[in-house]
Length: 356
Image (cartoon, rainbow, N blue to C red):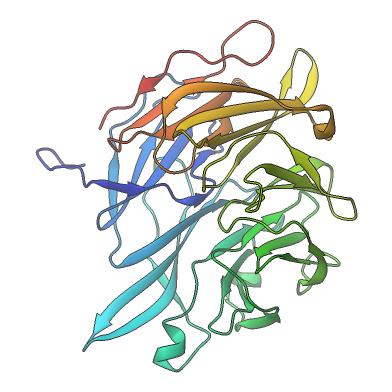
């Protein structure tokens, strides 16, 4: 922020990967705020000091998603709704941050698959995945409840909107790209979750299995738990518990008491064992952290309540030293981080409030 200027009020967490590690090893956190987004950046890899928030203006956003590719570029996808003569004009917009701490590119409109204003206004919030080649795939629910995709092709040219079909989608879909380059989509519908997957990298995603139980809209997240194999985690709206599943396998019900937000996921080595860490805002409003052996979720997750109140969804990332870092936005809009401590198992240091 410029000297003497006030920091805009935080309005919520972004969807997707709002805590990321750049090529230089430094972590960066992002949040939605009045009139745009805020960015905090580590001064050096591994911390502990961070910059004051930097404000990037972008007007009229109703939703914001953050996605990072293997090249460490950070992509921002927003849903923009402007008013003209009482009519809502809705489009999706895109910007990129190529290096840690550097400015964002200009925001570019990706348009809207609907030409009619009344249908265009029903376009849902975006999800995004970046494949192994760096191509961005953007997904959103259309006015009829199906799934649309727009993809950045070779040379940075955006392809036309593609209708991937489906029906009765609810809320924001979730998308991910495995290390092999294949993109998968997980989209809650009424009583079921619809899934799409690429038969091979670069292909148009096709419909895969329908998954039951369905997912609470906005709760799904994905983690690559083996080379090319993705495990999805979501909240069962009927029982309000956690569920996970890998393609071609049965869903696994898991303990947990999540609220209505998304799950943050991370793989980390604990005591020489490959483990999965799950974090979410619990029903009481504090951050809960669960740990299990990777792809051994059925053996149980061990949960701990951090006691830290959380507004929106928590985020997880590995720092330059391979330590797990847990980030939250507090009810006051302030950013707080806790870093994995020494000793056996997963413990976190005291929470640190980042300058605002």
